[in-house]
Picture 1 (cartoon, rainbow, N blue to C red):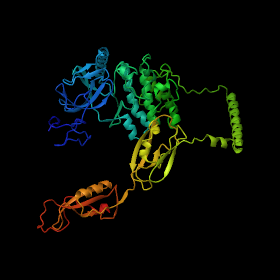
Picture 2: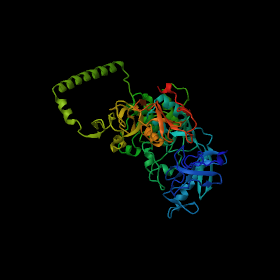
Picture 3: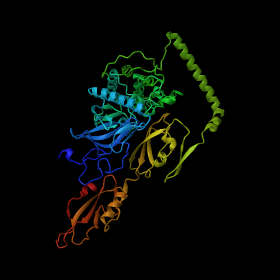
Length: 561
């Protein structure tokens, strides 16, 4: 049976089991209400493309999960639908500009058509999600993209603990930088590089997606904007600033900053007023100095002082590296960190001697003042009194907020209280990892990464290890209960189970005859499986078959014991 003969899920375009209305793959429910602004799932375009649900949208348009019935494969289809200046005619699905926005609609549509034409002509560039087709329907334009089984880089980071080493990052990003370089040489500026517009496939290959017209990537544009906080360059917040290859340098530098430090950079618009961005290696000392300097230079608030091209930026990354994967020639870029060495050796020695002597004298002075109690009183007076209280089922405790930049101590605190605290939501992105723990009760954090006190001035990842409670539990008494009650009880106790049907002339149908393990035995939620013995449906009481003649699954007692 070909895919065209199957009923497909409108949420993921996988075949639905016969008679099923809820997809076992993505959970999409048939008949789920949809916004009238967008196409109804099940719509067919060009007598070829089956449209599913919207998976991404912004002020330029929407992207649908779709199916190409001619090629029997999944695709993604982008529809030009600027909802702030356009609307859909419900009777025929056509898109028309709202009254008074005809000029803006026409200009934006023209830009969208030109961008799609350029991307379609550049399908041979590797690392860019290919455009397969484009067509006109419903008085608008549709662009068909290749469907990739891939994660966003944001999700990829979460699955890898929130940050990567430079060695890991280099292997991922060098091909992507080459892709960007080729696009720039063809006159295409992305303007939206972020962890959400970079995909990572099963082979750890990066793909660039999320191309939009320039107006969408500029604050204050006529049809609305879609910017990425922390990754959008400062010049994109002004209609009077020039954008160019340096704009993408900022975006990719910010993504590298996030990957290597686990911390999202400060907002580009805010940095125009007050720039307090920390060099990457101040947040993670393992980052090589030349990599930190290159990223910092790529994120200069001033577009004129910033690294101007991707090739120059790549050259800086490889300048002191030991890689031979690519060769780049970079023009001289004025990095922020410079060290001028004295030309005269004797002068150097004198300077060092004076510095060491000064440090010794200062150290003695501070020690004497501390010994006299001057600083101790100041410390007592300067300690912040603000604390945030959390109650759990073990004890009442507090999380200190004494350091605005340091990671708090989350161990011993309830995960729900942590996630519901608005002060943490603005500073951290939490990755939860659950496991059984004998020391901490359910939903309590028993470990964290990074450790408390670790500097994190901007928004970054914190991995919280959350207890699922004790792994061991006493086997409940289920003999004589109904199958429904037994399975519900085991599920509530997080226990795996199998139902074993047997022939037993003396047993009552539908009730649990016995269990293995027996009532009261301590069993593991991770490794043990409970077996429920039930009388086989339709079994005759006259068969004479002895109790224990099992049909189907038989437990391997040696494995369970």
